[in-house]
Image (cartoon, rainbow, N blue to C red):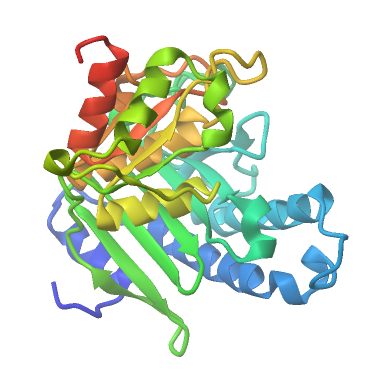
Length: 336
């Protein structure tokens, strides 16, 4: 497609390729882009407003971050609730499912999202982002059972993220390639800037919080030592690039190649299963990276094959360039 077309035009063109499409899915994605524009403006002004206190002050604390995350959460819920195409929603910020208000019609889609990931970095101007996953309802059971929501990631019909930084960008897939759109603020539209994104087979960077090194088991430590050990033949050592914002690190690796790792902190009783949430953080980006030719694994199994046990399940993850993820799997499984 022509570079510079709007994301709406792109979505509509993809819809025409699927005769069974009703337009419901298209409308949902369109509303998400509107929500992202609103959130992006708020994020860009955060250091200049009451959201994060006075710039340079010592008053930036969890309460301020919480307020901004709640704004992002409410913005998404309010934008998509009324369109009549959602059956329910689930958010990282909510303990339970989010019901569609009775005054609105329900549809067949389920939206799962992280409203503002990496938010504790916002006061130092590191990119933050919104991650989303779209599923299709599979039966008509009671919503409280969560049967329709707890689907493996391979059943996603779409997934993506919005990243807010030096520019605001949307990256998404509907299962047929990955495409990126950059917000042009002068016209208020997301324009196609990265068509058919493909991740490099092998990267040159690794992203991991090495501050947790002594909480990892020996095999995870071996993975990090492998990437740090010089070897001209294999292009090592890799360069460490870690910001603490999953979306930011993932986005860089998607475009330039590399691996992001958040392993289980086996020796930490507070995070024995890792930190990242399967449904609202890991699954969406795993779907994106696989569609771009990459891989996502827990070290022992493909992320997208996991059947969620509960809404906020946490999993270890190794995600990025396929050769790098494969190497991590080999070490963890004792094949190397």
